[in-house]
Image (cartoon, rainbow, N blue to C red; front, side, top):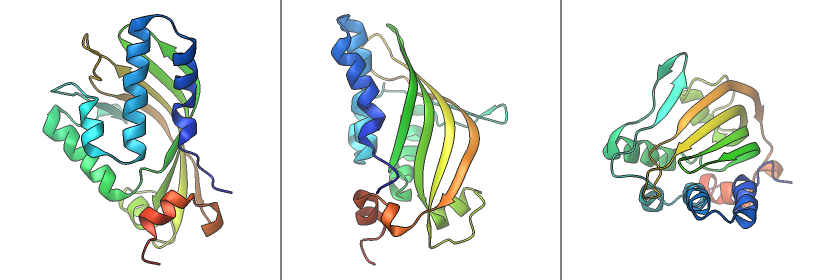
Length: 183
């Protein structure tokens, strides 16, 4: 059985959307859902359409903001993300907060990385040809502008809580097609 089901990432937001009557809250939830689904495809242009003209990301690592800034910077970040083939992920959201200007999601981010890319990022992996499940506890703030576009992502995470080599049977078919199409 596959260790990741990307559809579970946006399921809590879709459930909240179905229960929400407030139009502004519906708009902020909808744009985050659209963004998550574009990330899963991956659809670089679709991702960028969900953002303001000058997005500003904040990824906090060791007290420093290392998130991309500007349209070109964020597009470059997502281009590298798409090229890394690490877009097969599941965000197991257990806390969801919505207001007129922000969506907050918190939970365990479960992501599959090709071993060589995981090693390049500094994760302690022993086989660059293998595939790894890397799990983080993560809090994301999704600020939304007055027009309903995502301003950026403000990300806080725990560092890896699990790094595990996966067997071929555990890999989702979409990951196999993306990463192992030649094998």
